Image 1 (tube, helix red, strand yellow):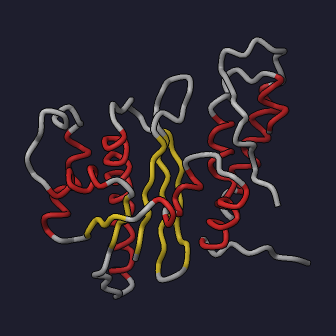
Image 2: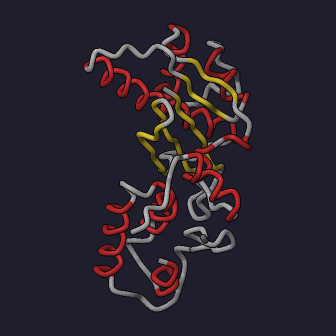
Length: 64
Length: 156
């Protein structure tokens, strides 16, 4: 069983990678937030991804 | 009723804000959990933990009132914090020069500690299960906490 996120993984808001569909990104976050109600272990990772909602880039989507 | 509160100092690389994490147990059962980035930038680790404790006691109080509605009088309410400086800060009513910049809303926890509504106790980092809500963990540690949170894999 792996952890939901690699401990060496770092995300940045100043990422200049390709932009991705914001609607898709928000959709995934919304789904994951729903899932946190029964899965406390993914809570931290989901909250971290949610911080990049305003300007999601390719690197963010890949880790999600 | 037990609550673990933990915080990760400047976990956010961009805005240098810290992350709160806490989980609440009623008996052995996990009943509520949160992970939230703090609103303000804290200057020290003890301040971070202090804010974390202050934000988790409100949840504790709410749960206490909920139980009271069900005619359950819960008197042993503990908050476990892994920072001794933050615990001392909550028990000592004097404002030190290093602590007087902390906003007054976070100091409201002191009043409840004085009244004995709940007590804050120290817990070492090895048993701090709220860790899972504040930072990335290695696999072994992650699995260990998951087991302690009473999370089980439901197979078909």
